[in-house]
Length: 70
Image (tube, one colour):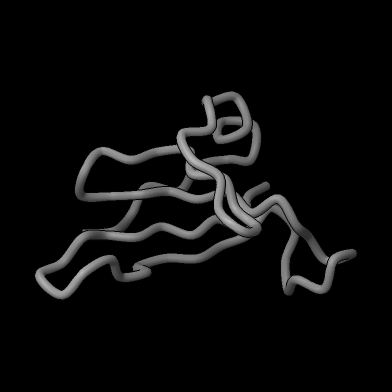
């Protein structure tokens, strides 16, 4: 199953559920989490507005998609 890809504006309009070292957790439904990175190319990241999508598996959270939101 492919993960839905959100735009930067969609994710920025959502409340931040948790704050990580460089990312804001924007979506958490118990089986899927979507993180929006606060850092960008100017900070040494490969992309601006990097989105990381994780799915919960039997062994823990696994990254299933990463992309630069537009």
